[in-house]
Image (tube, rainbow, N blue to C red; front, top):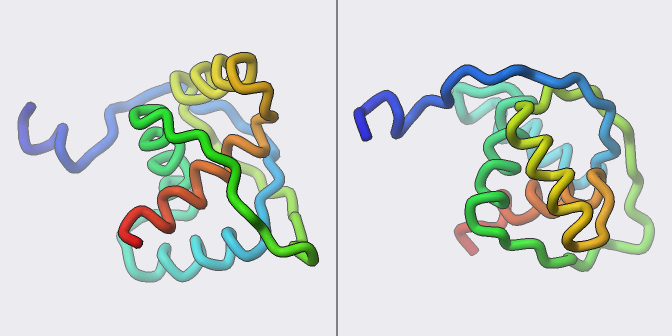
Length: 110
């Protein structure tokens, strides 16, 4: 693995999708986009890639009054195909899987 492979994602086709994200998770992504040299879209893609690698698909507890908003994302095609596989394997929607991936990434150091 060369230096660039460690820090950068290789090119992939992007699929435009509208995905519902829990508002509390999205707000945390907004804060992170001001810290890292990455857009919210890239943060979501990295979170999905990490969940796919670890296959850590565990439902998390969200507040009862959580607001959910739909956002447009350009998801990497290889990742989206794997999300489709996970959807069939775990019986969870793409929306749920995406939120799980974001939650896991946000809480990975806790």
